[in-house]
Image (cartoon, rainbow, N blue to C red; front, side):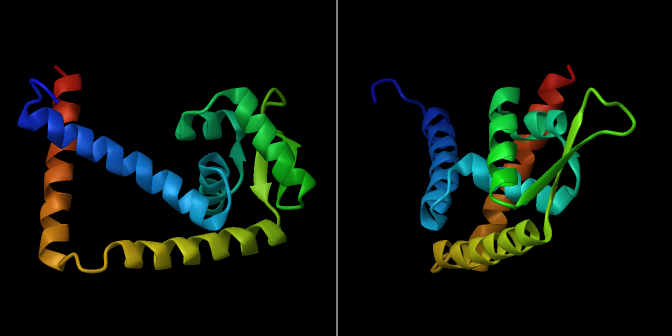
Length: 144
């Protein structure tokens, strides 16, 4: 690319790698990236409002509702009104959903191991330090 700086290339590669990783695993397991994200989030956080899912996953409310209803129809998720505020709907994995999410996590760990094959631990640590520093710099910039 003309006039591309080293910084441009660095951030283009990071962004591209993140997007490719998310999509590649979803294709690997035969689900959309959003379906994977919802199942994993519910497994990790337990019962969660649609609103919190929307914010955490950065997807619109209609998409969250559609995904949760699809999972409900498949017997993977149950929904109920929030007893503290019936304007909100809560979603949680069913026992079948827990098993599916557990299998998804196991598959993801195995997939990650294959992707990191041949990448020495020292190089992984270097990348982690760089990414943590970038995130700290972002936070500092936003707090100015």
